[in-house]
Length: 85
Image 1 (cartoon, helix red, strand yellow):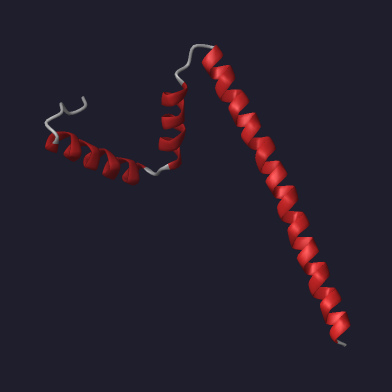
Image 2 (spheres, rainbow, N blue to C red):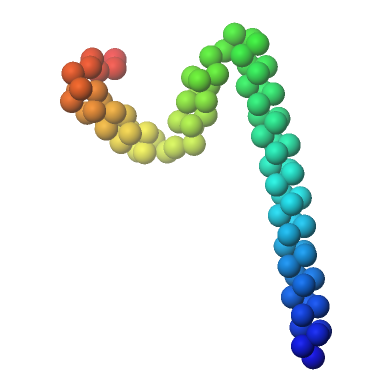
């Protein structure tokens, strides 16, 4: 009985490892595709740092963005730096 249990656990482990390996490969492919899109955008004259920031901001909801902007303004004020317009 123990041998059958060991076989099932071994098969499950192998299955998990293989699934993770496939997902990691897909993740690498997607990452490469994203790099290609940023390179294309840069080649068309877009600032990729700003583009990355835009992508980051679009992931946030409006309230979260407003909170972060308020904190940024507070920090800039504390450092004697001009506030953003």
